[in-house]
Amino acid sequence: MNPLARQLNETLQAESPDVYAMLSGLGKAIYFPKEGILSQSAEAKAKAKKYNATIGIAIEDGKPMHLKVIQDTLSAYDPKDIYEYAPPAGKAELRAAWKAKMLKENPSVEGKKISNPVATNALTHGLSIVADLFADAGDAVIIPNKNWENYELTFGIRRGAEIVEYPLYNENNRFNAAGLREALLAQKGKGKAIVILNFPNNPTGYTPGPEEGDEIVAVIREAAEAGINVVAVTDDAYFGLFFEDSVHESLFGKLAELHPRVLAVKVDGATKEEYVWGFRVGFITYASQSDKTLAALEQKTTGIIRATISSGPHPSQTFVLHALQSPEFEAQKAEKYEIMKQRANRVKSLLDSGRYGDVWGYYPFNSGYFMCLKLNGVSAEEVRTRLLDQYGVGTIALGETDLRVAFSCIEEPNLEELFDTIYKAVTEITSSR
Image (cartoon, rainbow, N blue to C red; front, side, top):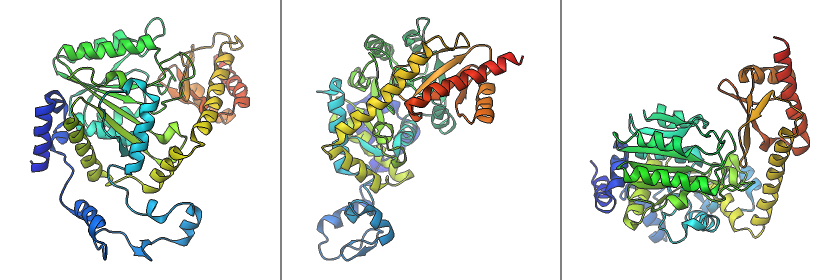
């Protein structure tokens, strides 16, 4: 094993032995090289005042070489902020700004030790880093039965982990803490589990209320006290889009420093929060009472980035930083939030109006981009294809009965026509039988 990896592992064993035990084989082996091209280039950047012949970019007139046809569209930015490689862990100013934003929006994190967020190539990349660092073949990854299908690819197919599902809702249409508890405590023989908490949920648009959030935290604490090492991952892709009386911050804050056997990991990003889907800017943040543990996890995370994509895109990191620093940022974000909230409220008013009879029910939703219909007596796939082929309307069929509708991408005046069209497709199918 590389001496740097061994040193990081020894630090984790001494500072947080339970966290060390959570690491996968790859997680134990990975490290960020302190010697080599990057470190020597960094030293040269600081000291080589005459000529710096270290790193693989081209310089012209003292600035990164670039094409005018590209720079003309980016003239508001200095070439050094868009053309050079970003550091593997991300642009330092952006990481600091995102941490400040996180602390402001999540008061429960206040006073707890968290790492500096490491920039990722959006959230899927952040989740894949979690999978690489902590998931070995056969490890349990616990998710609700209403989930984002990419978890299966990221943790199951790529890393060979076992996907363990529990029903998202209980009989009262609230978060099923008892189901999570059963799935989690069933891993006592393995002594380890990865729990993914995705709120607002994709595909249902559901976020637990404060009491439900406390129940989730209590279940994870109980599992830790039972001897299970829990990697508790908050997938906060749709963070901030809370439209009703749900929790309005990430559960990361309450999971941070919960128990030595619980490692809280926050995966988030600008992708949905700031409406910049194509920018591919995300972050991964850890919580621990040990500064040395946090530093070691940052190093291992950066090692994964170096070994896969080397570093994220510099221009989009600069664009996001510029937005976060703008005095107009908060007002513009609030404006878009209101638009999204109005769309969600309009959908709920339509569904509660009685105009669609009993052809469907819907799963509780109060946040995010989506909601899910539960169709009665008709196949979701059959409805999806009819909508697409006959009416040019796109929806997502999930399982036998569930139809996901992304109200985020439908203008409010068009929502009534959208649901009327879905209703028409359902009744046409049922009447033809």
